Image 1 (spheres, rainbow, N blue to C red):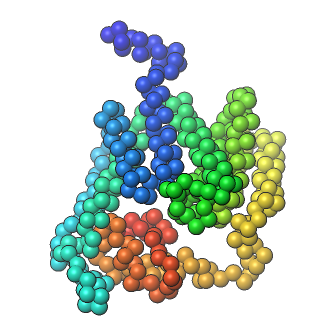
Image 2 (image 1 turned 30 degrees about the vertical axis):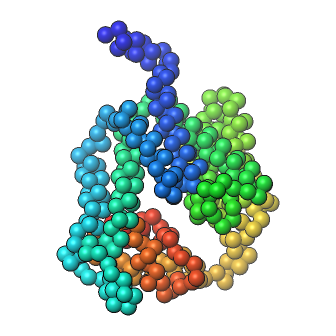
Image 3 (image 1 turned 90 degrees about the vertical axis):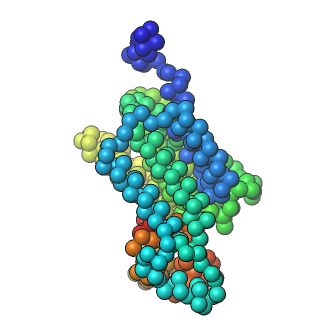
Length: 361
């Protein structure tokens, strides 16, 4: 009883609980660590992240359920992923499976997945991802605690962007970062651009909240936003700039309309004009990728991404309803590349939803 009374008084006084603070810090900074370790795209990096998550679950398991409906949906995902280990003869036999056996002389296992050992490792990763989703969604947070987690995560990504810029200036990179432009932790620059673009929107929210409450921390968030814009430009990804501009306009527009203040609306418009001016002045080759000078002659069919989509839907049509099994997209898709044929391998279908559709059905 004394301990419960002390916890209640501490909560009422707003004093921080060290245990809860450590929990908030872990939830906020584990994704930052995963991003730093090359997006955990290599098994050793993924193993570190999953091991830390497992230790956290042992020490602090979820205390609340997300409800029967969501639990059934998550269970359905797991069951769908496990279908890959059932006999392939139970399902529709696709032409690509016969092609591997007859044309290439590759002996495939009897399971639905042509590479069950890879599917098994991906299944472990999938379970870890769903566990992380459950942990984050099952939290019972006050508004102050939610803001703390978001601020910690945003600050961590700002530090990561600073590290990326420093390595880029030194023309170096950690040995576990693998990408074409030698910038950022992810193999695909669009992943880095998405991360930095979304973080820029969160920086705006943090700065606006501090400015509204009269805190001087908005100055630090302004500097962080300038650094994040620099990282987005150096990353050479259109996705990052698109998210930055569209997200900033949406967030600030919604905020100004909610306030219904002409002065705030004018301030928001001025900020967006300054942001666009900065992008036009310093965007360089990154902004040139939008082909703003010849929009009239742009042909969407010439975009490589849409050719990938065309071949991806052909793979979906020629596969069983339950998918091809986790981890098999890259190898199976290779024989479907007609419109998107090139000398570079396609390691993903340019869409996470299509990726899920292909491998899980």
